[in-house]
Amino acid sequence: DTFTESKLVIWGTDVVLTECRENLKKFVYTFLPVKEDTGTMYDLRQPLYIQKLEEIEITRKPMLVVDGIHLKIFDYALYNQLITYPQEVIPAFDSVVNEIFFQLLKHVVLEHQIQVRIMNIDRTKNMRYLNPDDIDQLINVSGMVIRLSTIIPEMQEAFYQCYICQNCTVSEVNFCRISEPSVCSNCNSSHTMVLLHNRSQYSDKQIIKIQESPDEMPPGQTPYNVLLFAHNDLVDQVQPGDRVTVTGIYRAVPIKVNPKQRVVRSVYKTYIDVIHFEKCSKSRLHSNDSETF
Image (cartoon, rainbow, N blue to C red; front, side):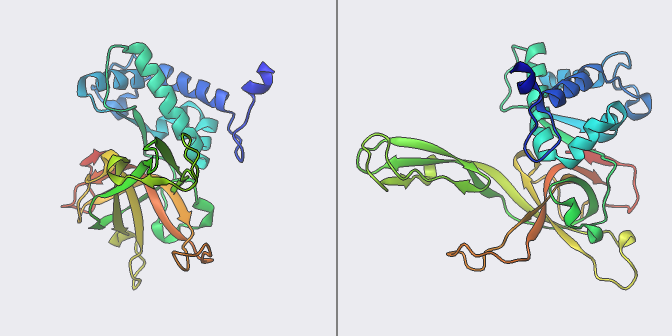
């Protein structure tokens, strides 16, 4: 039974969760810095990402930026799983990093769990050539920010209260759907639960539109645009006019013909869920100066 449990594969993937977690732990504990990448910032004899975790204790910013090329050098099979199944591997990476951090630094209190931000993957796509094969995979695209939305509150936990007995319950949002309780667990009344907006939990969300760079655009063609969805600490990190390289998950969602009906169109809406921004200098088209978020 123990052997069977250790070989459980996430449905629809080739990711064995226990093996994946062990490989990610090994990567964090053993990957040494490369002088060409890090210069003199880190001790070349100590594991790079352990040093970065120790930095979080000082900065108190719960974010770990991981270079995709480092993972590719360390374990190509693991890197390939990250690119192909980011929705399964990145949460496992988050869990491993938090486990290691709180083992090393038990006394540190952070405002939320550490989030892993993947950057510099060896899979840069021109937004003109994004196709259905890229859906739900990790990609890099570069371009110029042309429009930002205001900050949108996105519900994470819905708070319901029974209007008969005042009993309260919380329902988490799964895949953009709220499972509304139909029966009160206290008085067993049907359809008496009312959503209280001011007691629900929300996270920040921003919609960003980027346009392909002029140097990537074929002569005589109109530029392509791609929508980006940024969440939490990635909100308000870029401004219109900034040239950015974005690492994120390419997604497709159905569009309803009528909001009151369940019928959807055959053509899906696509966007990129942002995991990491690398912002280049906007004063020059080609520049080595960059910031990461």
